[in-house]
Length: 341
Image (tube, rainbow, N blue to C red):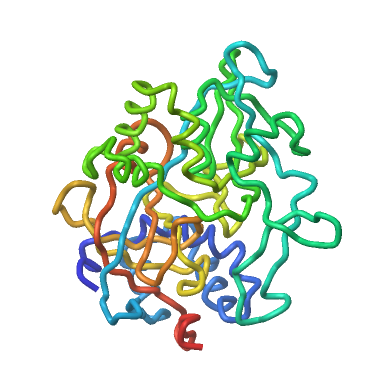
């Protein structure tokens, strides 16, 4: 694993302990997580390195075409402005999960479809697709979903949905943390790529900042832009005391040490060694991270979304990150990756 000796694995130890709070209930992880608990919270680099090298086996992830490189993007926890009540400034709803949305876990019907679920709604005696983003917007107050908060800016709300979690600053300065609760079942479509296809932006300018600038310059086409992505995320309010946003594993994410993966190929909670580079750079980013999250756009074997943390600077790094990288799933000795079972 190139760069393994250059990274300090002790920096990933808190994230591992966080993963173990869930993984310890799984027989394959119990002995490993029990051993980590005995080591404690502040081990040295040497102790952590010996722990991984003696108890784990790295498995390099390989794409179906036998290539070993894949796309590594970035995400972060944004801060947006909003209010508990709708007013002339805060007019865009941050919705909770609709009461009429049906979720079917396909793995309960066919085990080979584990991690896949179907969202829809019942019309008569049929299950039909749930409303798209445009249909949800068109329904307005008729959507049977709670409004948790009201956002000041629709493009900021859109990127909150893309990131999957974030914080909302209220007029009195207090903060509310919201996290992913569910999604409408429609596939994620990149509005940056839509702008490129429309000839509005070049690919190198289709970053988050570039999209925001385009939206500011073209307010009359804002809805057309947002509706190019039919996916819609619903939120839940989270305790503000959490150390970080809650990922798909159900534990707080750790800045610079958590990634989102496709759980069909990497077990949620597992350590991963990521070999990539910093945004728009050839400077190596070789780091032990934890697979603690998933995402609608994170599909494939060698595919990761790197969590940069909270705030504007993290957002800038996340928005610029579109690198190639290699990945190794680091699993307890004797455990094999899902794709080999």
